[in-house]
Image 1 (tube, rainbow, N blue to C red):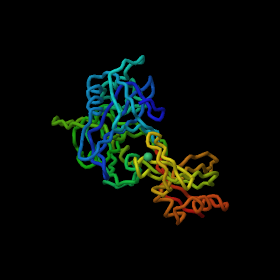
Image 2 (image 1 turned 45 degrees about the vertical axis):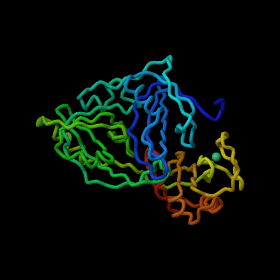
Image 3 (image 1 turned 90 degrees about the vertical axis):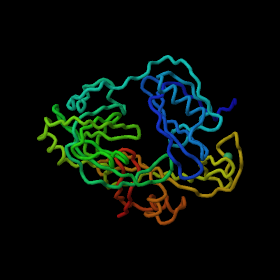
Image 4 (image 1 turned 180 degrees about the vertical axis):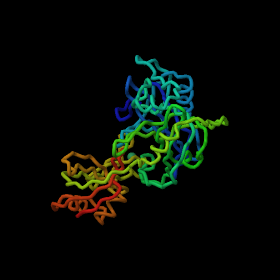
Length: 351
Ligand SMILES: [Zn+2]
């Protein structure tokens, strides 16, 4: 199809998730493709229920396993910058001019991992950590925005410390890992992501691609003192700040009744953004987001995003004018709590 709306990517698959059950008409899977020396894009695969596979997905899995490069055609890009597959998406072998990025070596030196002395550790979810789970904090439930579902969902989270004879480091486990890993497990965690919290503390978070293997060999010699010290450190995933809002852009998302593409429009009559569909329909608010530019008390500029739930709680009504008035019609300072990494606002209070 010769249509500029459809995009093409080429590169190496760094990973592809198993198929997950979607809430509505589709199941989905998530993949990452390395499209340049230091570039990676996220691709979402969709499968009309009850399907749990497609030719494109199978081709991607094969290319990923064989470490061969692919050409992916027939993608569309969503507002978050993810690439979405559709029925016409094709994945074929294709040579590229850059090299496939390699994962970090399986070092067991935890100090080297914290201090970046391992090749390829930056910007990667490729950190491998081996050690004994020293202690874990209690499980907590955090509402996190999920770009696949376009809403906040509950995620189980559990922080703790892992140690071996070379040192100790802080880990943050999510979802099934938070439930399945217990204290004193001797374990290898693959594909952990290095992160820094709101106070500059380094920790290692599990991601959807993290895998773990438990070992039966008891690791009795480990840095207990260092581990205890880290266990007393509190990782702050959220940051609270008092700020003045400088500008706000409100987007109303409406869904095309014909092809279900998400469209953003200010007009009362919307033309579908999927030009292959081109339907015109009356705007209906399916979801709303506000992109906010603010200055905190240190005069630092913040770019934050609030979604429907938070906007409803703070502004009252979910319409564009009310939301803009709420932020702009007075000299209020706002107390805003946001997720440190995603910059998604959790709570807004006006003074
Ligand atoms: Zn449409």
